[in-house]
Image: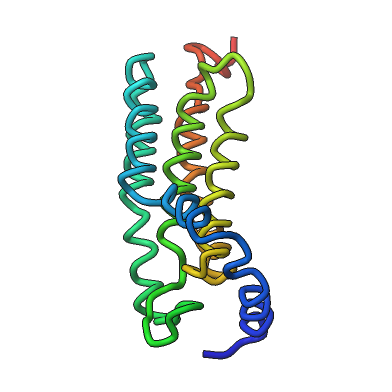
Length: 177
């Protein structure tokens, strides 16, 4: 594998890996595990459904279901080895980062219309950033693996945002009088 970004990616990874104790970075990386992140999204979906939002939870569920459909083909196509496991393949893009971003940001978007303050999105960003940081510092993923996942899942979240904040025009709006 070669390309203009791979050498800086490798250098950055070498400078960062294992600079923080493994117990800390593994706990952070685990925030991107499906058994950790998915329940957060499910609770937010149930809350939004209870508040009368049907479209947002449906689109969030579809977005989460699409994560493996987007990530797995890239992993197979690139077969990129891991920072600490050069014999293994399938590290690009990061499935844990994609899961964390989609679950936490999706949950935040579903809860945001009902929150009294603007805490859901910053909290989702922090959880996703902590996951990504843990993955990179522990050596589970290269920095570009994480960045690719963020970019890959952003359109999914734009769809969730649109579904949550979409407002139908009132009857008669836009009709000539």
